[in-house]
Length: 420
Ligand code: AMP
Image (tube, rainbow, N blue to C red; front, top):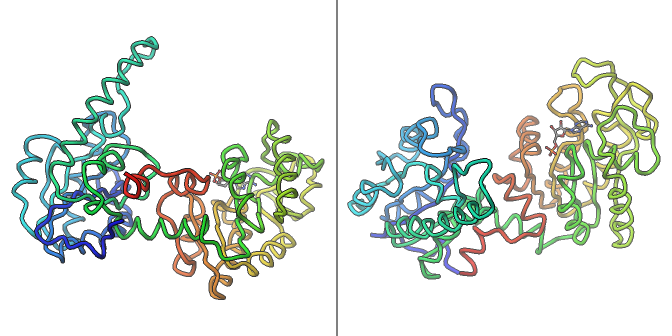
């Protein structure tokens, strides 16, 4: 497999798929440029070699051409961060894009307009009537798959090589994230630096595991984490199930959870998972006490109680001190740690203590040589809130992509570089 470090971009045009899906305020100012910064090492390497990056990205979820989602809003910031005046093509597959791409000189950068202005990027028909028949749906699907080929081919035609640095969309088999790779031979397609780091981090928790391996799975619902939990049961030594999921497990075991969040249709499933963990010899760690509240609010009255004896009218919004100790003990003795999801409603300052204590234990384990991967929306928000993002081994930039990778799925964006 080709790697970005080995590749010499001198005199080459590189189609670089990045994730510049940055948040913008109502005046189209970027409010967080982390994603642009994350792609800089790749873009700078291409420029330093004497190559010319042709940057493709999506922004938001437009349903067609829509000014609001134009990538022109970010030209200034990208130029500033790269130290090069970035050129812009107003239509990613229009004549202008082809001409500008062809004229691009070594050291110059071209940013293409939002790829998702075209339905072909995602390969899903748009504008189908709500009452469309199955035949109409099938015909529309077939048509878009056909035009997607042309779209992909056009994007590929601009460049000599393809670099995928968009881990955030690696779980999508879109034109620019996966399909385009087949227009480049093995030597001319590669991951960017960010993608490489993400892939390596995932491998460290999925295949190249140093034991004991502890996964901390938080979040509100068992139903949204079930596939991940099942996959992890055949990999981990310890599985901490926490957050809102705690109460579905507690109720399933016969505990009293009163108003706590619970999926009543998942009680059987919870018992099943407890059984499976036993069969596989996984140490399933559940909370023993909770910080409870008399309403779902930061200002609610609070107290601690055993997790299975929550009084009427109260609900568990975080773990209690006994649980914190148990979790910390397990985490500190681990050599590999995966953390996804808070232990409670960390958005409320009065219920962050548990998540913070998990974060501190992860940091301590990391200091002692453990590999720690934090990922999935809310856990990233947690480590940022607690100011510990730089004290864990890796914070993933890809929410959905990371979760699918942990479910054990092959990500199309990764497979496209490795296998096609
Ligand atoms: P998820 O989006 O499924 O990863 O879940 C994260 C969300 O779960 C966060 O917004 C938390 O506020 C929420 N959460 C965690 N613990 C609880 C709880 N005990 N009760 C209600 N929501 C919770």
